Image 1 (cartoon, rainbow, N blue to C red):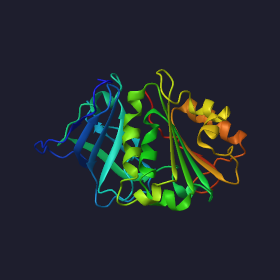
Image 2 (cartoon, rainbow, N blue to C red):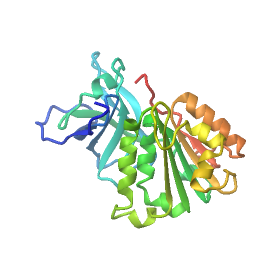
Image 3 (cartoon, one colour):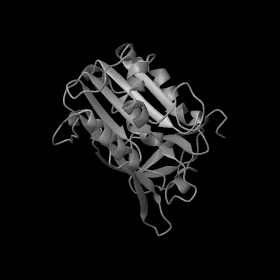
Image 4 (tube, rainbow, N blue to C red):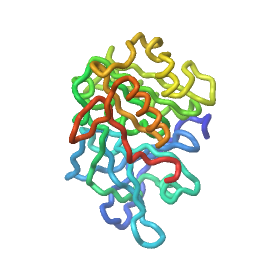
Amino acid sequence: MTEAAPMTDTAERPAKPHLPDAQIVTAVTHWTDRLFSFRVTRPRSLRFRSGEFVMIGLMGDTGKPLLRAYSIASPAWDEELEFYSIKVPDGPLTSRLQHIQVGDEIILRPKPVGTLVHDALLPGKRLWLLSTGTGFAPFASLLREPETYEKYDQVIMMHTCREVAELEYGRQLVASLEGDPLIGEMVAGKLHYYPTTTREEFHHRGRVTDNLSSGKVFADLGLPKMNPAEDRAMVCGSLAFNVDVKTLLEGFGLREGANSEPKEFVVEKAFVGDGI
């Protein structure tokens, strides 16, 4: 299904008995045979900052909830919640979650947390959003957040996947921004989208780390080399990716921050990887 157009399920389905902390699935889109996104109802009491994550899941065979941390891909102002996920055939959660349909229920613990928030960064000129695979999810939230464009003169979204089809969720989201009635005028001229692939031919190739360390991304976008006076960064990917990017950013002179101590970059340590 990697070559086919994304398939979205929005048909109505009958309501089912409520799970604890249940939310109803309102849409499901299968982007490839390994990636899907879905939207669910939002609890009225849920307040979160764009970039945060919550625990979601399904009931396990033991009768206990099977939960994992998922970044909220929708912005804080959205009336629904969106999530972006990998499919793992033998994953405890995604082996089941990938089969959800509109009208089904998921468990959602309404206690958002996370480090990929504006409050964890010192003021700067440019914001770099660095991700691989479904690590794009928190940035899908931040890219649709007005505060992102109010705080920064330039926003650079770097996203690396193995194949072109795996970039489609992010590509469509970015393409929709300039026409967005809420933030369209704010995005124009500020957002630089830099998608790359590692296993398939594409106009930009290579890993985020390679394109940063070689300086290629700076040359391609006409931007200066990262420096701690002007640049801020957020990182979300696999553990190995996070470690490599952290080392690279520190080499540029940036320091890792947190909600309690804002600095020049932050890393999401709760990212859900291939084993979910």
